[in-house]
Image (cartoon, rainbow, N blue to C red):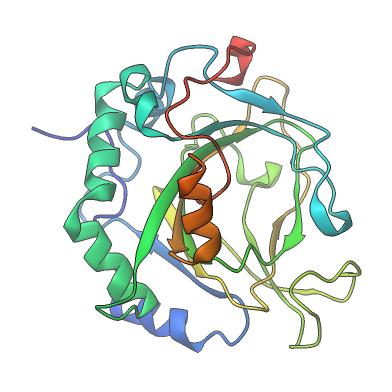
Amino acid sequence: MRKAYEFPRYRTPGSDRRRLGSVSRAKAVSVREPAGRNPGRGVPAFVRRIAKPGAFQAQFGVARSYGQKSHDRYALQYQPGLDSELSPSWREFIQELHAQPYRDFLCRTYGLGARERFVLSMHWHFAPNGASVSPHTDARHKIGSHIFYLNTPEDWDASWGGQTLVLDDGGRLSAHARHVESLKKVAASEILGNRSFMFKRTEHSWHSVDPIVCPPAHMRKVFIVVVNRVNLQVLWRRLRGKDPDGYPLYVRPAAVPAAAG
C-alpha cells in the first residue's frame, strides 16, 4: 500500500553525511527522497489530516529565557494519549519513527554509540505571517533535531521565508548569549520539494527563522522530531509525568481556535 506521505526513508546520502560532520559550528544536513519518487505527492492531504480541529494550542507572546523574542506559533506536542486524535496516516508515520530502523538511522547520522540512550519527543508548529524563531542553540539535553517541512509549492512560496537558518558565531559566544547581532548566516534549509533538515546540537549550533511574510490564509508548517539524551533532567521530568521538553504526558490537548489547523 502506498503511504500517504513521502518523507525521507531514514537514509542520509554519503555526501550529506560528510557535510554533517564537516560543518564546525551548527552541524546540519538537508535530506531528500530518493530519485524517482514523486516529491511531496500526497503531502497536502497528509497535513490536513493531522488531528481533529482545535487540537493545536496558541503560543503567542510567551516569554522565553535569555531575553529571546517569543516564538509565536500554533503548536501541538505529541504524547501517547493523542493517538486517538490523529489520523491513521499520522499514527502510522509516528509508529515508524519509534521503530528500530529510524532509531538505527539516528544512531548512524549522529554517531551515537550502542550504549548511548536517547528518547524522542515530537511536535507540530504552524506559524503565521510575522512569526519568527530567534537565534538559539537548543537545550543541552538535545542531541539534535529532524525537521520535516509540510508545505508544498501549492500552498507556499519560498520568497515568504520559513527556511531554517544556520548561523555561525565563530566560536565566540556562549550557548545562551543575549547579544547575537554578530551571528553570520552560513546556510539555509530547503523547505519545498519534500525536504527535511537535520542538525546536531552543539554549544555553537545557532539557528533561527527570519520573520515570515505570507498571506493571512497561509502558515509555515513543520513537524519536528527531537532526539533527547537521557540525562538527569530528562529522567526527572519523566518521573513527574512530563516529556523531555517539559510538556505533560497523557493529557488530552485543550481546545483552541480551529484556525490553527
